[in-house]
Amino acid sequence: MGRASRDKRDIYYRKAKEEGWRARSAFKLLQIDEEFNIFQGVKRVVDLCAAPGSWSQVSSDDS
Image (cartoon, rainbow, N blue to C red; front, side, top):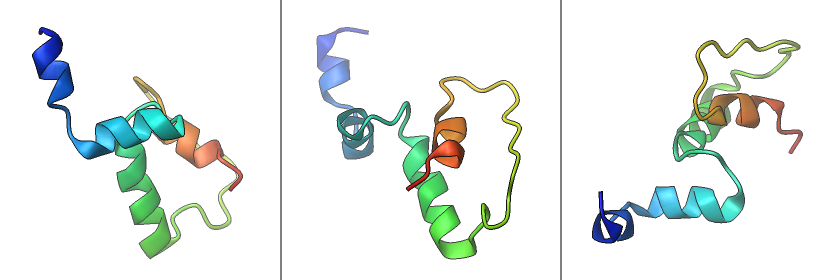
């Protein structure tokens, strides 16, 4: 893939990089957690086969 294909990536890809998230999927997980509180009362999370690991990053975020 050349430079032109990198320039066409969507807004969530660029926003994730600007905000320090590993991947754009972090925004979907944040949205799911906001609606369903999936991390409420959770003490441990296992992220199997995580690459690039944005789900682990979001689940361990204290904010």
